[in-house]
Amino acid sequence: MGSSMKRKQLAAKASPARPEPSHQPRSVTLLGATGSIGSSTVDLLRRNFALYRVEAVTAHREAKALARLARELNARFAVVADPAVYGELKTELSGSGIEAAAGAAAVVEAAQRPADWVMAAITGAASLAPTLAAAERGATVALANKECLVCAGALFMRRAAENGATVLPVDSEHNAIFQALSAGRREDLRRIVLTASGGPFRTWPLDAIRKVSVEQALKHPTWSMGPKITIDSATLMNKGLELIEALHLFALRPDQLDVVVHPQSIVHGLVEFRDGSVIAQLGSPDMRIPISHCLAWPVRMATPAPRLDLARVATLSFEEPDVERFPALAIARRALAAGGAAPTILNAANEVAVREFVDRRLGFCEIAALVEATLELSERRGDMAEPQSVEEALAIDHNARRLAADLLPEIAAMAS
Ligand code: NAD
Ligand code: MG
Image (cartoon, rainbow, N blue to C red):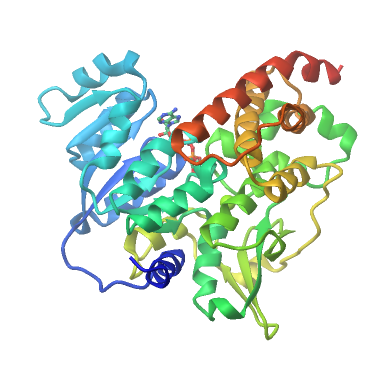
């Protein structure tokens, strides 16, 4: 393939052309079917049963819930990542004709099975191998998981383009940008703006933020989501991860990426063109809207999401993010600018820090501190090259998790 042809293909994949709508049922696979995004996707499938056929569903260790879903959706293949619950899954599926499997390799197999459309909604870097497997067979990938783009974004997008995969952004801000980008030519784009709710502690003084409990951090003011992303939203690390996600998804430069805090979560993202026009996407904060946009792509489907009534919302407000009280955003921006292995390390350390916070071994403010310390120590040790393969990405991820675990006692002690 000539280089100009290759460039054309990459450009096409960065903003996929609308294919003709098909009247065949679309075959779909749900990776992370039992989670928050998974459940919202299932809700839409239930309402549009005739339009879809479910190939595979996967979960971590929720065997009973997964079996129930697999039966209801008439799936062909159900997989739990944790082999310890394989027996339970098998028993729950007995007599159904649905094939059961367990383990990380079986999750990858689920992604490789021939479904037209794959929802990537596993939490964390554990999503990388299966999501990549779906992209490598040229599937349409509805990408909810952002950690895999933070962990190995350049690699993921390159493999997706090389294999003719279409990547559709599920994350509400990125879905908004994706929709708004269709208003103009890429050459005319000046910058994009992601909105952030600001999380539950947006107006809290630093002294109070230091004493935040797990329960308080798990109560998001506008969105209902899984625990990892809810904590990330409270620290604003979520917005940092989303900047890195946007850089890769839309092939942007760091200086084209902005964040504005918007507590009502009605405007999800904005695109500014060179003439000064700013195109925004608005909607109720209900993930079924962006999920449906990807599920029905290239057409649209009705959803049960509350209709947006701007007169009732009354006020839309915007403010600068405060990186003094929420340093995670600044740390993520630095990792984005540094590139190389820094985003991979950022993501791994953050996964460790969030788990330690939820398990009450780390204070809320020490989440960002642990991530920063892990990045600094990695930089001092030198090898910060960008991962060129999944194995390299997972090795960097693994080493960063170990470093974070080593640094944990020292960082945890900072709180007292
Ligand atoms: P969740 O915790 O509710 O669900 C995660 C799903 O992944 C579950 O089905 C779980 O069984 C499975 N899973 C977890 N760990 C696994 C592992 N190691 N191996 C295999 N499967 C595993 O999470 P969620 O809120 O649905 O988020 C899923 C992804 O979507 C995350 O990457 C998140 O950042 C992203 N996302 C979520 C939302 C939201 O509104 N929930 C919005 C934007 C982006
Ligand atoms: Mg988001």
